Image (tube, rainbow, N blue to C red; front, side, top):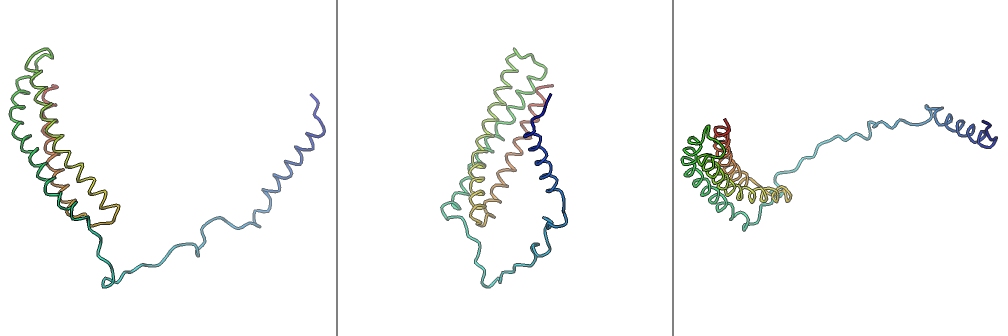
Length: 170
């Protein structure tokens, strides 16, 4: 195969240019961060002149007790329904899928999960308030306390549901 002289010359010129890029590395400055480019120092705010953190609007803060009350109501209904579900699950242990006791236990578990979901709805609203507080840099202590209370109820319900599901699958 025969090379054309023009393509050979173009290749040699390209290699020569590339070689020039690699040569003389000492002539160009390093791209590493220099001492002058490092950030240092402190930022102190005088407490006397500092503005207090913003708060959520009063209308939003007023909804917190009702959200907690709604979660507590759903939680109480869950607690009241749990003994019946425990009995139905106990009766269905070892039962065939076609057995009525197994179906009754599944319905009881579904009812408990529905009640758990009703307790989770206020948690979603509290999460929204928490996000709004974070975005606006508002004080979220009241929301955090309410959220922790509701979350503790839901975690208790989750434990009961996990226990009952575990007993039914054995």
